[in-house]
Image 1: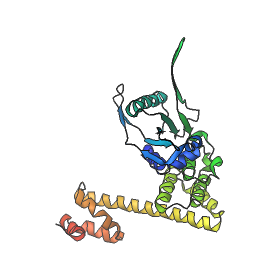
Image 2 (image 1 turned 120 degrees about the horizontal axis):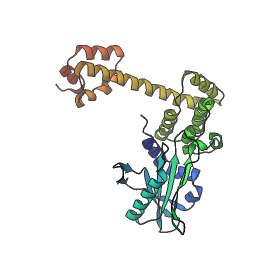
Image 3 (image 1 turned 135 degrees about the vertical axis):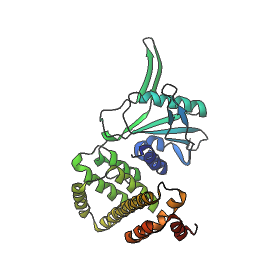
Image 4 (image 1 turned 135 degrees about the horizontal axis):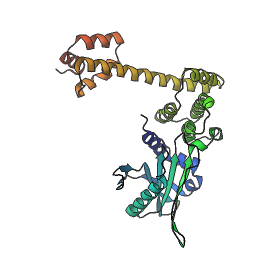
Amino acid sequence: MIDHDRLFKELISTFFVEFLDLFLPQVASQIDRDSIQFLSQDVFTDVTSGEKKEIDLLAQVRYQQQETCFLIHVENQSYTESEFAKRMFKYFARLHEKYDLPIYPVVIFSFDEPKRAEPQNYRVTFPDLKVLEFQFAAIQLNRLSWRDFLTQHNPVAAALMAKMNIAVSERPQVKAECLRLLTTLRLDPARMQLISGFVDTYLRLDDTEKQVFQAAISTMGLDEREEVMEIVTSWQQEGAEAERKKVISGLLKLRFGNLDTDLEGIIPSLLQLSPDEYLGLILQADREELLLHFLGQS
């Protein structure tokens, strides 16, 4: 299963300023960008359901040329939930109580369906009294057109286009455009891999779509085409290595039962061998011989 919260947290925390620039420019214009400090995750227990909820991202920032700070709470919501706005208010109340600072709450709705506008407020009212009017900034990706972000020179746009409102027939084109935009950003390899991996996770193509994807790449300029193909090749290599690791782990389990730390430790070395070589070693050597061969222990 895809760990949606982890993927979004990694993306937004790595490109936090770019995220604000793209979706919350008014907030971005007010903060001292050198003051951003990510706070430890808070875990809240929902006494009604007994579940523990961990907030996704909490950043403390300072206003420009001021000593005054406030918090930005970003939550990714990967599924529709009828009581979600109420839960956001509970987060707000508990964070406000703990830190005693103003909080700017933001939600990224990242599910594909439904496409109706999600509520972004929680109210408590009586006929004669408005007790509470809580609102949060909402970014509902499935209601945004990916075409509106094609010219955004922003790494968050390159990633999140993959989760916007995309017709089924457009999936290969969007994947190609995400990578084309990525190649213009001149990021370091680690950040390139973060975004390309995000795109590949959410836009997995079938064989027919891959042909359309390759055709879309072929229309790009030479430099862009070469860089995109480098990314695609890295995906293929990672996929092949993951498959080989799965096969080797399976063989070791069949031969020796559940894997302990020592047997898991020799898997990277086995990955460097050809299939004939690692198959022969696993089937012919006993456990002690394998550990002695790779780890120098028996």
